[in-house]
Image (cartoon, rainbow, N blue to C red):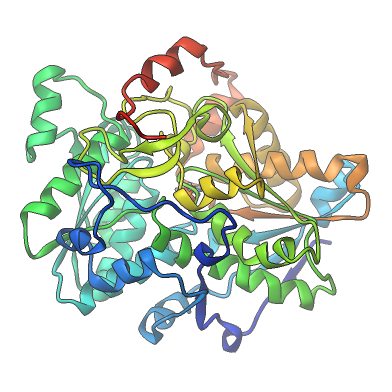
Length: 451
Ligand SMILES: *Cc1c(COP(=O)(O)O)cnc(C)c1O
């Protein structure tokens, strides 16, 4: 039988781990979207609250978690660590497999870990309204939940095709008092510009971010919240790996040999992986960190490491990251949360420094792994998480990993994604091999002098 390791509430993390001071080659600063000069952090204050800006640029290794934040996280944390013995048997694993189950949060993924911390920080400085974007609906529903808890208004620009295809994520936001607007919309200049060009535009994350940032920049009582990519978001997710460290001791294991996570913007991967960096950096254990992305949106394996915008309209600061170009529109694969053109600067820098190995997988092999997981461990993974499941299975079967330990993050469940499973079962899912010229065309729009 698979075994669960529960931490008592008294063992909840009291501090987040900030990886920035431990990145060997350092992190390059964000630049101003207009001038291209290094950004003064205070310039972020039009859309972000001071406590989050401090976290964004902090070089302190440990940062206290406010008690008010932990009081909410306590509703589902600590999350279980599970030894996946049933899965091991079914796949003929050579290694032991453990997973951290982040699907147990109210919204069904790791995202509320950061949503709660972000809404609290905004509440602290008197912000009454938050604007954000959402693709598949995971981040929008997580932010709506956190806003509901703290009594902050929540406005979510939801990529139009998801708005139409995922009515239940919309209802979830509504239940938590969030308002979802299909993007592109006529409520912003950025949205109107896109609609003028193409009234039938299905939307993209890049467009939705432009709309939400515009609303936040123009209204003093409104701020913007981002669900991944930024340093403070990755920081909030480190509770995943920090809890796992303690649970490994309970399980009688010292440390994992391989840590796996799927990557959209990089937050759940960094959350499980970076708390294990210390042993790698000090040479105590040569842990491998595997960051998994869809082959249809190959930011880390085929992107450029360059300064680029986070959104389509070029309103966000320029970040030094792996990117396919902010004009890149990924094919409509079924892991909506992994369809983003960029990657967190922290994860990008760790790849540059040779500490993180990127891996690209096709969606059909990931769904196949997800079904194997559901049939052995019970939980139906989110399509995003299925990438981590597939990579964990690949690692656990390698002869060189005999008797080793593979840890992966189950970032969420797939209860709202059964339409995608349907498509997989009826063999309607395509595996996309992006032609190089498609990627080259998008890369031509990278801002100049951005190496
Ligand atoms: C959003 C999401 C992801 C991808 O985002 P990261 O910031 O890379 O973690 C992965 N899994 C699930 C379930 C998600 O909702």
